[in-house]
Image (cartoon, rainbow, N blue to C red; front, side, top):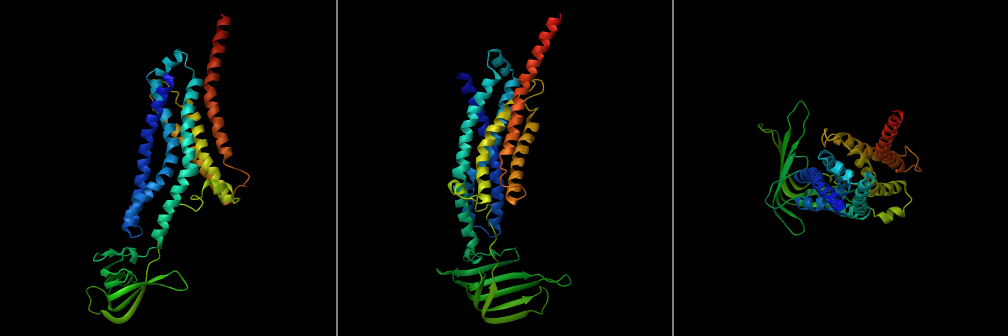
Length: 372
């Protein structure tokens, strides 16, 4: 039990450190993306951290297998380099026991990953999608604030209002926009000033318009004197359609129970993918233990790069097969199981190759002694 606690503590501490680093990388990437949407006016800045919080279980589900895979390589690599593994084997600690101890820790983490994949992540995605849906339903005017310049979508204009009533009616509206011209002419500047404005929606379509009341419109090229001034009692301009913010399909937000009760191909494949993550956790553990065997003279990082490439080959193979099944390139009767079986066989070959080599060396030494 002392050795088990020692190995478990080392594995879990390294796993936690690596997982935190990987999570920070993923979260920072998404934060930059969401911040860009907020700066362009497609998302309220207040919801960024809420969306990231709902997406963390999905990030954790993907980072835990890789983090534990690297933890096994780094921890056992250090034990080999510092000759602790040689001492353990000299005291009767076999590699089979090492594999069993590691597999116990991996099983615990696989249960955690399975719980995240099957239950927590779909709930988080559903809540994040609800936020995205609310943001997509908002028009440019819904984000305008009193007495502040607001950049229009596309960055080709600004708007400003003096006051906004409770029913979202704008007072003293100012709008400025640049109209693209042909290559032979310069771009025109358009200024619109109105006493009030309100958002309207087309009856037959979902297009939204800004209806301005009592104002004037000025159009011309800066530096010239041939401006066109138009006075109006009512003037309408079409608002830019909302941009797509959703990152996941509706299938990703479905509960596992709903996927089990569905007969659609896409749902069946999504269900297999959710079960594949914890299965992958166990198989990469079987791969990591034999890959961590290194010569102390080569250093603990000798096999990190080949092992990581093997891990990503596993992940890419799963994604490729999933895409082929969803697109119909392969029959639905084929599941994601063949990829797991291939890498499981590879793991078993790596595990028993050392035993086979040791047995062959023992037979060779015995033969040489008999010959003498």
